Image (cartoon, rainbow, N blue to C red; front, top):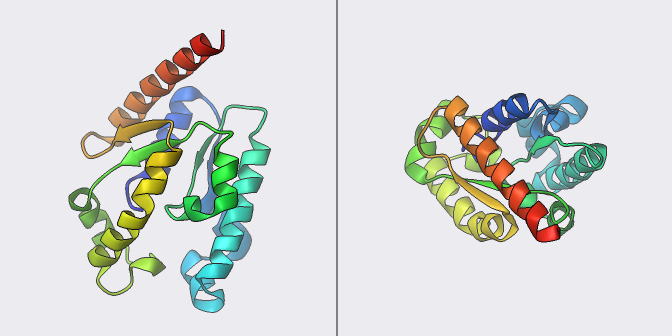
Length: 169
């Protein structure tokens, strides 16, 4: 949450010349704003929508290279975790200090209402072990521009793909 998934994902897709899908954008296009979904239908309904959106995005991209950005809580769904087992998953590692200014600028995050940084820290403590378990690659995004981080991720993905190919042969 607030680590730059959308911006870095978009940059990576541009560098790889592949499509980019942002599941939060897909949800908003189909269902309205995320804060209004939370307010009107609750987090449980949002998570169901999110899980279906992730499944649809992965299915849509199954025969081609595609960069897909997921919302920070999407990985908590067990079905989504199973789907991600068929994908190359990148965990964009960050810390509280780095996200603090981003969170302060964006008050539209329903799960961060109230003391945003305390809520972020609590959510992150729950999510971090899942991120780490699912990740094929971990990229530290604490330092560097979006362009630099995109390039770093591109190199890491190419090295990962080459190593995976070598093991399979």
